[in-house]
Length: 403
Image 1 (tube, helix red, strand yellow):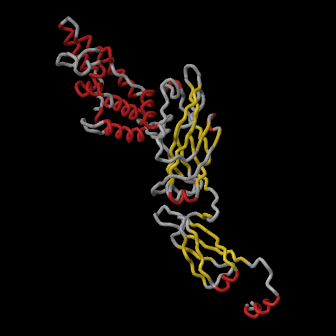
Image 2 (image 1 turned 90 degrees about the vertical axis):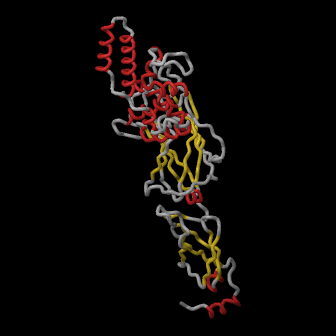
Image 3 (image 1 turned 180 degrees about the vertical axis):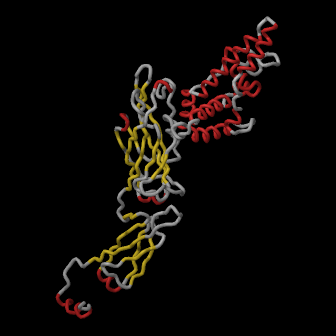
């Protein structure tokens, strides 16, 4: 690929330049100078410019810059022709600037210092650029992916989730911890535990090692990933208020050289926005099995709304049914209507028929425009369990209209 070829080519030029300039024959010095100028590759971008940071950038600033750019240019998320080259360039820049020794060499000698093998800081050396060509810096796709996994976990893109809805796009709001608990089994040949863990728990970030898992780019042909879908049950309260779930997923990784398969665990985090609907999909690219000769797997969680004992959802609106004794329905009463947030609202009624309903504005589900739907209240009129005594029947007939 482009970035790797640049590094290899630059290293070769540094070696040739060093040998020619050290030649004893004076004429070779001029020849070397002309040759070096004629074939010297185009100068690479400054690593600080690549990450868009100041030369005095702290470790935290470097990591923040890398996270942002790696998310933007990772080839599994960006289909532009130069995405892979930009991703490797960003990774190489971070690998150098995040290493104190390499950064010191780079700050003093630039790219050529890395390729030519400058002496470490503090060593005794002359004032010029050193010619130790034996310790050149190199970088490849596998190393770029290693750095990516250390930040985001799993395979390519495993730390990123994309959410989409079959009906409407998810929309904003503040998330809270989910109180639901779900479990699944047998996912990706391993196991899947969808217990909603408290977001305050310290769950270590997954990062697979170099011996297993991701293989060098030429060894695994890139194919369209297989999407593995699993339902993620969520309560209506969580869909109304937002939620945060930490899901433990196991996946199988196969070594390209030995064929050995290792099972590793990864924690995927799903943050639901208030108002999400059933059918909303949250996808983690390449978070599933990575087996030789098979396409990688995307893990997709499909939101499934749990049945509720009080409410039925219709889009952004909710509906609830309140029981009322026949006497109260005929004579009037005040009923307590339950709301999705756990509170109640009083509703005064003079007369209730079987087809009577009331609408409570802004007591439904959050909408993508920032408002809320309605709550429709219907009534279940309860008749007496025992027959009316004969002595009371005529009085009742006299009171009730015939039609």
